[in-house]
Image 1 (cartoon, one colour):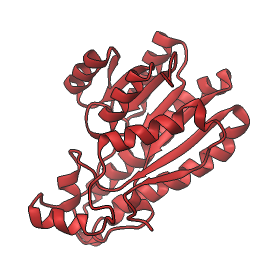
Image 2 (tube, one colour):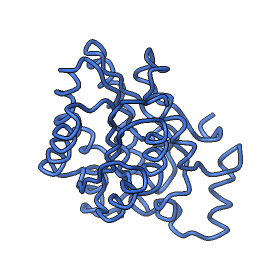
Image 3 (cartoon, one colour):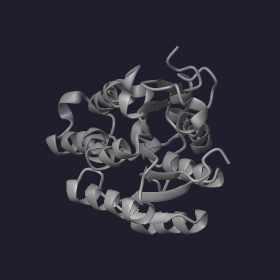
Length: 246
């Protein structure tokens, strides 16, 4: 029960890494808000874990404000924020990615971090405590070709993590990031372009430990970084990647 009596928001929490984190946090004693654009998925998981469901578009200011308000109204505070929601464009030459695709990737992967900070950091400052965890990617550390603007958005997230950490440390708020390798999530097919045995083999060949990441892998790492066991750790980007970035 390492998160007993803690409150946590997990964006993109209805599936993939977010669902794994939400389940693990609830099992460790946290009250969890599952926040997702997929309202039905959020409700189903919240019912499973005894948490709250919240419809949210993390790229929309009013929607994020409503999410923060709902959590603060219910709990009075937010101890942990997991910025997990993310999207990608399909593999293609950088100059062929449409402006609409570019805007959406940056809005969901980067602007969302600004918006959640805008609406939740003031309450964390008032409480003089908090943990923010940004789910970035190994793509921001060791970019893959033909995913240029996704890579860039995750590199932005890693730098934002460090900048947030140094500014918020005097307020008792820790900010870290996880950098997962490609995982068994709904985004995997989008990263690969097509989900075939050949493409899976090509991706797996870049991972020394020979397997994709799982929601459980990310949940275990997130649990540590958001628990009091990591009370002196801030500004870290932890690779959960089976050795891909070595």
